[in-house]
Length: 137
Image (tube, rainbow, N blue to C red; front, side, top):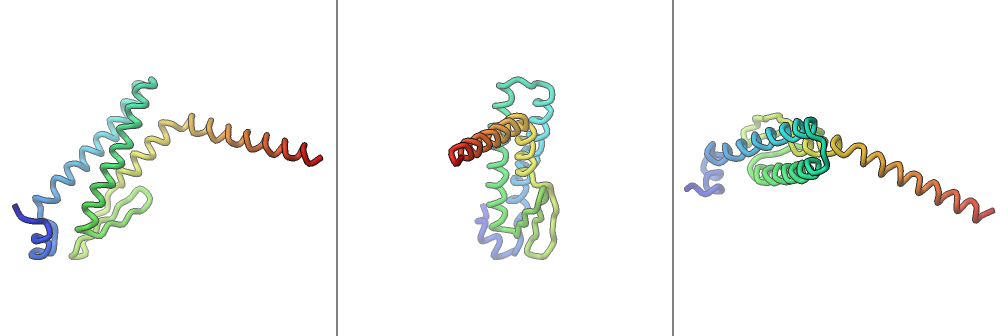
């Protein structure tokens, strides 16, 4: 088997047999994100919500771990919802950032809980300000 650094030193690009498995994993991640959104829409009970939350967090971690591996071989630019991969020859590939897509799916899935928590924090601060105003009188 060819050592990765030897391959880069001799060819100045990533060998196809090394990069193909990474892209296959990225395809699986995309399918998992789409499947989790469909499952959430069809079945909205709490157990599925927690399972999908764990799945989407793991998907995001796996995605950014793969990006860390690729970034040692290519130049990676992360923009909102977009990744730009530039190889040593200057050719670029623009793709959807699946990690951000997974996190957006999480936010959408937990939006009601997030809004309730933000509202509770606002009310708590409001009561605190009212108590301080009453003490100062």
